[in-house]
Length: 103
Image (cartoon, rainbow, N blue to C red; front, side):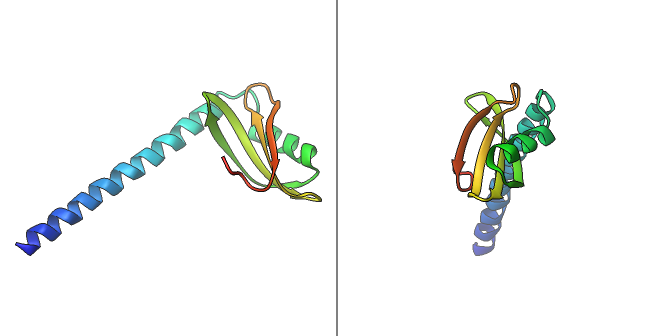
């Protein structure tokens, strides 16, 4: 009886893990597709963030917030770590704050 319970719990854990992995994968696919349709390249967004902060980029990624695709770049420079969000269609800085990405 314990063997059946352990087997059932193990199977439930595998299914739950697979579902969580698929959800993460779908978010990554959605972000990758959004970046492919962007007018601003990742390199352009990084250059813009570095110019804005006076620092060097050490991390960048895609974020979809409120249906808008943003390229979020983290830099480190004279003012410390700065996070800059750039609209992937217009190239405009839509958010900037000190510290690492918090949203």
